[in-house]
Image 1 (cartoon, one colour):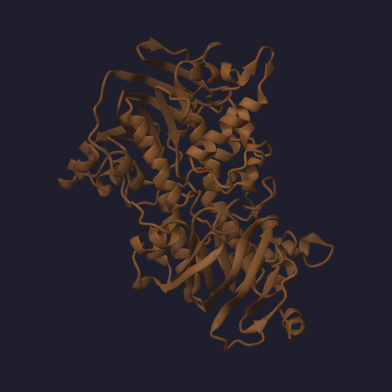
Image 2: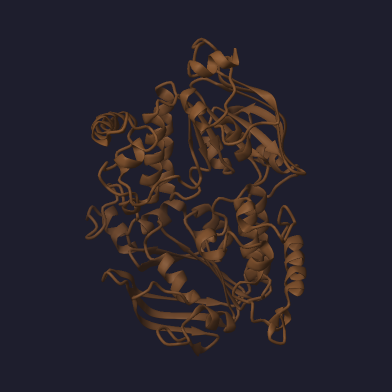
Length: 549
């Protein structure tokens, strides 16, 4: 039966109520039991969520379904028929497509070339490209997946790159689509558009499996949800019969605080004073346009804004590594002393020496060296510290002991400092970076997207550590595209749009709607004018904002 299903694409029984059934699936990697006796059933034509902490086994399970891993034991059924999925090509023939958290696209290929890659019709590319162009146009119109087929991938925003991944799966005639943390790299607007796309796919009879840790997304988009914890399936429920609080407790095995608890701030002296900061990149584009703000000891200033409006350049400049070739002006004072913006003492090492810690927005490309061990990553940027050195040589044993202590304090799993960074889940990679920076006890902590791609338990943990740093009298600059995170963590909120600070608010005296207007470039004056029937001079909130590149 398995062989027959494999040869016919795994779709012989279209009347079967379940698109996917997994029975007793187990998978171990050495001593680590990633999946243990997993049972899962996914109804056809539904959106089924799979949630769990980082390292719970979600991605491993879906990689088994997509043929990347072979289960040690268990059975897989597609449309009611048993099937042996030996590799991803078998999964594709069975109508299964997968969109990974980190996209599998060739950056200097066009959209069209990426679509047909691995699915060419014979040795000549031109007929394949011609056929793909027609199919792509039809799919784009049908599922609101509009993207220029002739643009290269590196010219596309992250949201559009994800559309290409979905189009790749649909071009291969996928009826079952697996998405692994699809909103981890998307802005709220891009995530909302993705949800509309998924609803359209569901309406056409497609089956969607959504791996995510975001409870809001689960409650908003799914029909049913399965919860994994430590490699086991602990519950499967209908979404409309559960709550975020219940799901969070099932994920973690204990009650979880979904809202940040913190005492009122006790602000002290100014730690960071930024005045009229301007930055023009090497292409002549003005990324920062006269940015000014202060942060005091014992407070968290949140910077809210749609990704691509200057917050990345602000963090990089403050952290000591602005874009190459950028022209910078203005002033930055740290604890009352001027910081060098363009000279030999404007680098990250000097910033760290002045008491600035930095958790970058992209942990994999900027916060870690993925092929290096955890203990090596814990020392990066601080490898000249006295406690890490013995005379002219680094004290590797001391660094390992420090890494073990940090990993225990920050609950990094698995607690193995010799493991390469790439072998940790995204949430545990983030904990390594946060531990490295917070444990240095900086006077100012720069935090970019602190919980992007991080599960609910790790989010709670990271938020607590940031609040503890603030309560110890340190200053924190928080940049996040997650408005809920900004409002719950920050003591003050500044909104950035097109490289300008549009306004500042207290979290308990504003709303997401008001912040959303500022994020769209609508100032207080514009807002009042609009209420009086006068259209804003420079903002068009009825139009979709351009997706950042």
